[in-house]
Image (cartoon, rainbow, N blue to C red; front, side, top):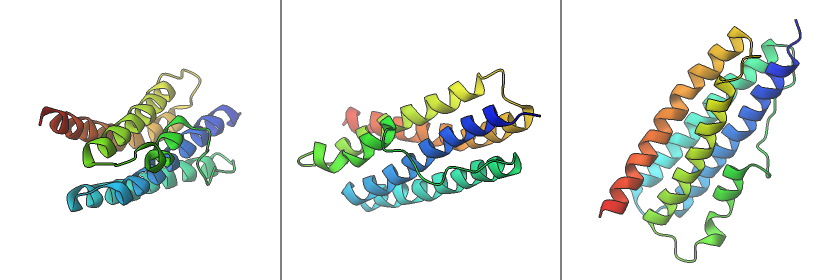
Length: 150
């Protein structure tokens, strides 16, 4: 069985997930409330755990898993540029940037789940990880809405 397609897709998701973890770590540095700092740090750890699950799947397929994000990823650029793009970052601005990154990672996983060439085993791993991605996205969306309602 040729696993190249599954490995390539999983590695792309690993890079995006690691970008997200790095983004949350950066957001924790910029947040102005302990509650958001704690949330962002927890989410960063959660994303690293998700990336590990994807990496294990690549190994089980006989591939070499990605072990770093990509500077070219849109979510990563958004997060890394958070400090420089915001002259006086407040919680609202930080949440806006994080939520934009969440839209990106959610879309990447949804695209992968539509891939008809994916093996059932790989699809199962992607679907499992997507559950945490979706939860993170929805939570950040709700926090953003709350900040904008104030």
